[in-house]
Length: 454
Image 1: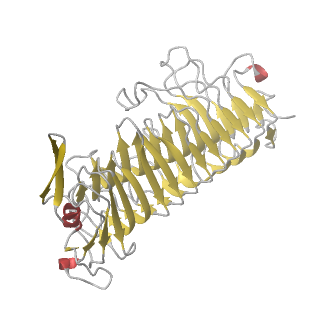
Image 2: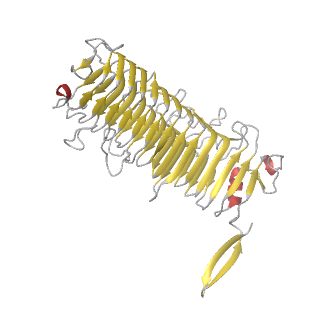
């Protein structure tokens, strides 16, 4: 298809024809050897996905239909250049169409850069289709990607992304990453997909991204691995909703140095909603860090370290954590109507890891913890810790109408409800506790006495 370019000379629009852009909606077909098949009949045939992207040009909305290729599938890194319009990548089914990337390289296996909008459906992205065919990085700690979307709108559905990692687990493997530093939000939808065996992040939305992540199955890394993995991460100014996902196996080899989270909300100031997800076997089930206005409701966390962790990190891990323009306050979050079962340590915990910033400000603060059901906790059902290095601790939080039972089954010094702060509110603490039902017998009911109903 010819490329049209235009200029205005003396008020007259002149249209020229070149060879680089297809401006009208067109379907391009990808098959092995660019040979027509019943599912991909042509006439616009390419032997690689990258060749079809080039043929689609830099303008317009087009479809690239990808047909099956024998294992290891399409062994290429697909790079979508800056363009306008939408590119629709449509496979004939996950497990039927596989894009496996260039062995030994970091990917991304599918990547965009200011590429307008993309749709990715009905295919598998596999970073490790066999021995010697895995992703790799130049140095430990470098990132490898399955799908990376930069400043691009994206709709991903019915996709399998697996093995976004190196064999040794030394690279940081991200299955799906959406990043934006634009003045307005880029849209990300990930739905009805399976994400498995990444070792840093399963689905990540970072920066000016508005994410809708729902109805996915997200499973963390196999061994070996040296990183703390997050199943779904919304971070650094992003916003959105995380609903109806099934998330499991997010364990770090060293939780004290960095814990894995089923869902991690980090450095957010716009309201993000996390509803009706299930998390199993994570260091931290759902984490809310340096974040305000989040609503976390009707989720269920089982067999995890801490089920729900509301924390302030600040510069605890160093000054370069990317939270602009600096650490944000952990406040005005609502944790309501959730369940926590069989937590190794605590059902719900509030803690300030970096009380030096802002100096003299107590946090987490002004959060509401309500109507949660917490059963079987190794130490505490709900606990508000003193700051790690002294300081004010969490303050002005409201903890109400929670049902807590069977705490301290590992640590005999645990409680259904514990508040280590001091102040002028309930039972001499800095927080308000009302109408909480606690059924673990004294002396493991509440500390101080009065946090629970008599």
